[in-house]
Image 1: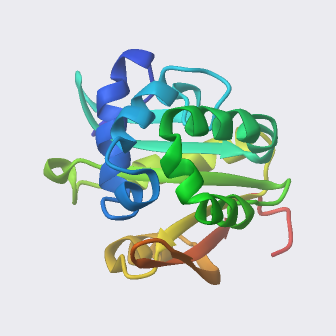
Image 2: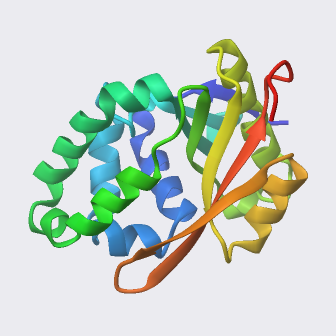
Length: 201
């Protein structure tokens, strides 16, 4: 079984590769061809929503097998603006070109004070089917409890049947559906799971 560990800045290439794997069509349209470079730059910095500080890796001895990027409402509230500034400086014209989509995504991705958000989760193809996704989700659940949140939430492309099935099996429920229009139109589900059983659904 793989081990779940906190990320290190030196793992920026695995982070950028896995981020692209988590949304291989959406990110290039949303962030452009340089999206992996953007992920690498943000990953090594602190106080932004793509930082290594918010990332856990699944390790097979010394090799990265998968990752999860997640954070709570407090981090989102404190680091959202700085993340946007970093993205503007890196993307320049593309950021302005897609400003409506950026604003919509920022509005949609808001979540409540008692929620902990999974931004991205991905496993390398050669490690899929070995329960690593479940390990990473369980690690996110532990983060929810250790930071005193009540719910775990995520967004997933609605046509990603494998991921949607996994999340449902893990206890997530669809709470809304939305679209983001870029070159193509992308449809997403917002899914949520109650973690703190002392809270009412």
